Length: 331
Image (cartoon, rainbow, N blue to C red; front, side, top):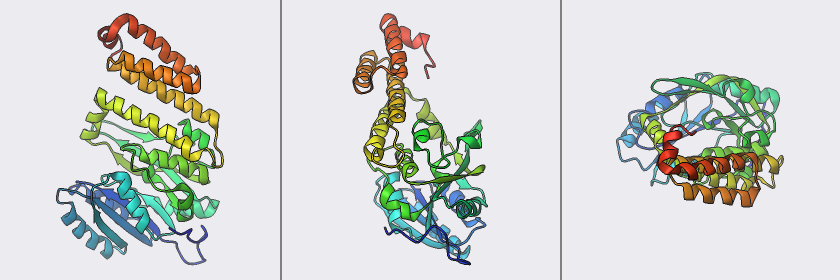
């Protein structure tokens, strides 16, 4: 991956935006995301769809959609690879992308028609190297805007605020300049979940952001995802991965511009506390105690860990069964 051109396009020449869509077994939904890219008011666009070893009719769906995308004036790279996970598919897209600007979209989500146009205009105006926007998260019976207000978007260069979750920018809203890739690097394929937020933490440290204060993307929660979110053992598993993710953020960002050790320690203590709470909710008092002591050894008795200690004390008195009765909705 080379450093690309300067972030400001030559007069009269519009820069190409590469759009990377990883997909897996979404033959019936892939058209939604692809069509939203085709409907963009901005051109030129390079569309890269990476099939991560689907076992359904995704290859046939891709063949039809690639032809339609070309007819809509997009250059296309539709490829299939052995299953390696979403991070692997995104990396395959990054390796093949040739655009000056790069963006991501998931295979069941969609963009507003003016997304790229609005973001490229703001990037040109501000000279920033990355841009995000608000996203509408939809479930079967609800929807909400994230972040709730534009003030919560990643803006400027304040990576500590992102680490502490004071700001956010969903990956499907981000557009960034390809010259940042050597510093940011690839997505971590060892993270089964949250490889996107770990990658964004790196991007926040090397890029100055701008933010469009509008909803420019729609994120769909599937019933399968909602079911996993309600499963307690799956929650514990996710919390362990999240803890590892925050560890990796320090390993990869501590030497970068704007690193804030205090912000990371506060976030880490929150993550230890979350894992401990999830373990308690699952009746694993002994494991929760181990997590507490590990957190204290690394970070000291920060406030989230002090709260976890109090919960452990109550859990030992009540026992696992009583604990779950008293705290059915711990989170």
